[in-house]
Amino acid sequence: MKRVSLTQYLVEEQRLHNSIPAELRLLIEVVARACKSISHAVGKGALGEVLGSAGSENVQGEVQKKLDVLSNEILLEANEWGGHLAAMASEEMETIHPIPNRYPKGEYMLLFDPLDGSSNIDVNVSIGTIFSVLKAPEGMGEPTEQAFLQPGTRQVAAGYAVYGPQTVLVLTTGDGVNCFTLDREMGSWVLTQRDMKIPEDTREFAINASNTRHWYPPVTRYVNELLAGKTGPRGKDFNMRWIASMVADVHRILNRGGIFMYPADAREPDKPGKLRLMYEANPMAFLIEQAGGAATNGTQRILDIQPKKLHERVAVFLGSKNEVERVTGYHQQ
Ligand code: AHM
Ligand code: MG
Image (cartoon, helix red, strand yellow):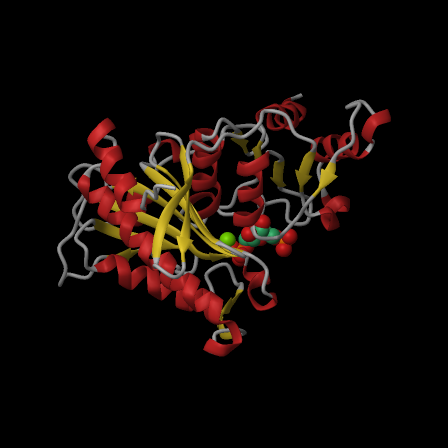
């Protein structure tokens, strides 16, 4: 089998479609290199003394794990000096991270959830990194939080890495979705799936059912119909999967279809869901749409949402198109 590396893929994509400017290519390669380091740290587990809590909390009041903090540092350090970025923002940091003055600045802005699926870190279940790339607004001087508040349609690239039985990197630059597998011996990313496509229909759904009693009526109606199986209104049986790592659930859906839901619910009426728009929902929605799926917050396309703040939360319904449209329709009725 002729192997195509991430570098070769990016160079050829730039040459053929002119879709990946050189600076963006550098940025993606640097992020991919950082993911390789994170994968290495994750893989060491107890041997690397990286498991357990870091004894701190992030801006959302969640306990940070040692690996959350380490992954954040790896991404910051890797991306500071290359000259391709104006600023970064992370789920683990309260405010934006401008590029230090000792380094040149570029036109892109990088956002990330350094290690998604925190509750799975210490129990050896798949976790991952999610990232999103925006362009800095024209004529921006010092980067501000405001500069980041762009709708997901403005993303120029997005992707995630999954640290599981295999380490994979899934990427879009707005020209389809491709998957690279880390060759651990060679230390290189090898293209293993071209142009991933999500089936429009599915028999599989993902939701944390322990919150059933808190759901709002459209979600209850939709899930009850799925659970009713063959003799219910849907006329077929559905299977359920919930990994509690969005990266791993989305990776399954990109490979074989399904619908992923993290709805808003009555636990905290003011909070529109758990997941973050800028670090989780937008990059995943970009990937899912590029693979032919759909992503909404129940009433609106996620990529169209105008963010009001950096750490904004959002309800998420994404995956196989016909299912996402159905549950979205129930919200609109
Ligand atoms: P994290 O970024 O702190 O890890 O939280 C996000 C994760 C998602 O990966 C996952 O889908 C969800 O939280 C699971 O939540 P729950 O524990 O409520 O099932
Ligand atoms: Mg996360």
